[in-house]
Amino acid sequence: MARLLELIARGRAVSPPASGEMLGLVVSQTVRDRLPAGLPADIVVGNKTEDWENVTHDVAIGRAPFGTDVIVTLSEQNGTAPLARLSADVYRYLATGVLPPERP
Image 1 (cartoon, rainbow, N blue to C red):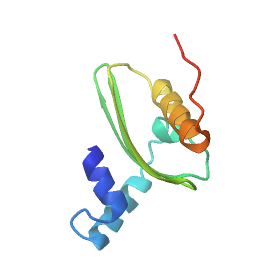
Image 2 (image 1 turned 180 degrees about the vertical axis):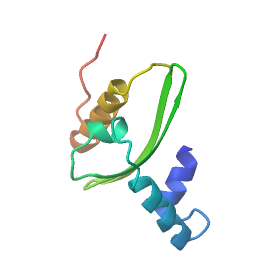
Image 3 (image 1 turned 30 degrees about the horizontal axis):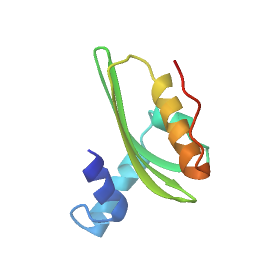
């Protein structure tokens, strides 16, 4: 998934027009309570979610002022809060270079 999202973000998945269409699809995703929830509102995020019994997944392309990044999460936990916290921590680190505090 990470490689596919990278190709989409770079405009190299199939073709530039097809990549643009794919990016539009993930940006229009309506489930925003995972990775996008941990990011500032002005960050453009395209994500794709998946739920199975006792797992919560999300993959995302985020376009921030400091660059475009891809993040893939495969969690064996139910719930969306850990994914939102993770994306907030990653964003903070990429924006400032400061590692988040350790959590138990």
